[in-house]
Length: 244
Ligand code: G3P
Ligand code: MG
Image (cartoon, rainbow, N blue to C red):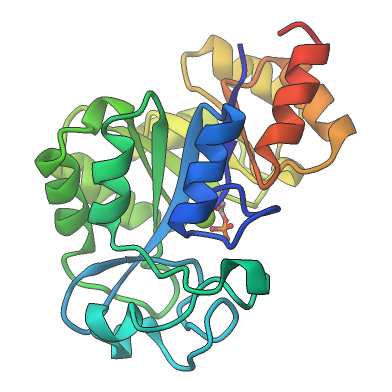
């Protein structure tokens, strides 16, 4: 059965990467949540998508220039809807301590991409996964494949997924070459044939970000291990209708 992973929580209906969005994902019956992590000025793991706080909070500036305490003074709910005023930017530990008690996958996306170095990000994330004892339900993903290879050097058996939006040739082979165990392609980057081959070769495929019903149907029918969506409730309905 194709699993449904809620992108940044249920980001289509709730403020992304907040506890409200993660709780909603669980409430509607998602199989997992996806979240993004950046490092703060004081070396803490903040759950937020952009490298700046401008789009999703009432603040302005780079995440790396805030301490965690400063970040958590910002309102991360009202820019989505007034109804969510007071939602905060979670620390990774907040989400892991919550997810630990749930039957939910957690996909942690490392945002050390482009010019963001975030030294020690991989070690810090793995230490938190270890501290909350959630390795069995965790997937680490990133567009930074050098960083993912470092994760593999640090941890021999955690599930690691390459994120990509190019048309990679035999992505299952490439993933294996850097120690990744699964692939998270943009849906433009794959075909149904590629999905079937990858799954047959034992490399789970979890495409992102799948929000439209026809695409959900197509990918569920193709046998993806999971799809990543802003609308988990919608995807669950589609899966139910397809009897998968
Ligand atoms: O992990 C899937 C997806 O989240 C990757 O892109 O930009 O939404 O983090 P982005
Ligand atoms: Mg992401």
